[in-house]
Image 1 (cartoon, rainbow, N blue to C red):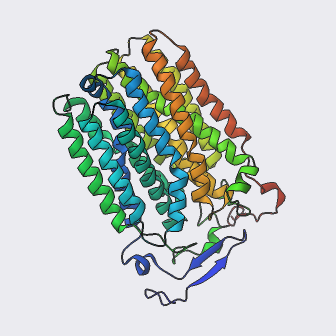
Image 2 (image 1 turned 180 degrees about the horizontal axis):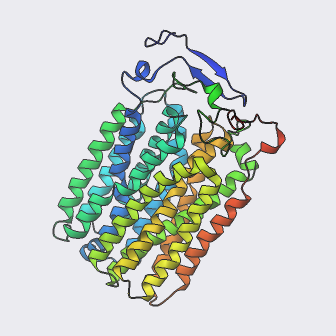
Image 3 (image 1 turned 90 degrees about the vertical axis):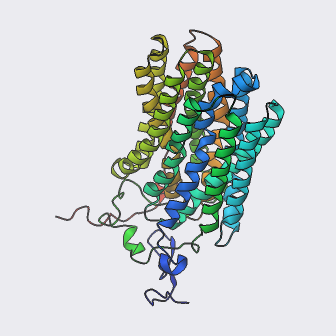
Length: 457
């Protein structure tokens, strides 16, 4: 087989670390277009499904009024959605690996489940029906789309995983801003069915269209215009060297778990998700009880979602300079400190400016962890196992999300309670400390080459 664009034979080569690369095929030969499409399409799908997390928080006051739910019932819908979205990650990763080139199956299923979820939320006030339709089906659908998009961009941009994953996963945050504004200002009990039905149709069309066009590259594919053997050791080509060493050997899931490092990453995601969902639920619950205005809720939720995206973009660049592990620790530290800032805001009658500042810091700190861990998992456990290993790590969001929502419920239903804020902040500080104990498995057991260009004058 040859590459019609440059007439070079397709072959597999390996680098110093033993990693395999399939070279000789351009993206245009495989897709008929630039691989930039494999960033744009997942990005669009992530924008579409972003309304389920941040958008639900903005819509919560209207939904409780329309359906007659208590705050804990509304939180149960969000908690079960988070649990199902995160728990479906390993299934989504496995399905991605079983598919050949076309990715329509998981994306179309995700689109259909998402539409069902929003239509259910639009027309039913029965809690059990909403839990099944919105939380379970919507959570699984969003999980399928999320992991498929992350896996796709990871495979198409092996030399730029950190930046491209950050760009795509960031859309899961700031993509919700239009719906957050609409839910806060335009949605009311009288028109919530119309707004949510319209949102469901838009989500379905965007996700389905993206899925029909998305493709996987061949296994171990590498862009034809970059020498992978030099990329592995030359910092002039790969600026993240020497701060981010590639895996010394492949670590499939069992080996990764036995190393002890993958479980530590799982715990980091638990702590990150606990803070992130605490912030969303706290803001939504405070608006439900009247402790903050709808204007403050919309502004704070929009800032939270936007800073999540900005934080991922900034930390992807910073990670090349100081290393992904160090950047992850720094982001958790910022997220933890932000929780104490939200406590200060609550103690000052939730002044909008204070809430906005610390919501922004919270979003930047907690959001960055997910995208950084994709690259860290790839660096430490090998390219072939990135999807299944990250799928395991990401399930930590299920446990952490439930913890965070419970803490938020305690804050909202117990006036002047500072303990949940302190717990949320300490979770971030604990996560920052935990990253200091994380070590790349097997690194001390092999001799590694000095990155080319380090000592050159």
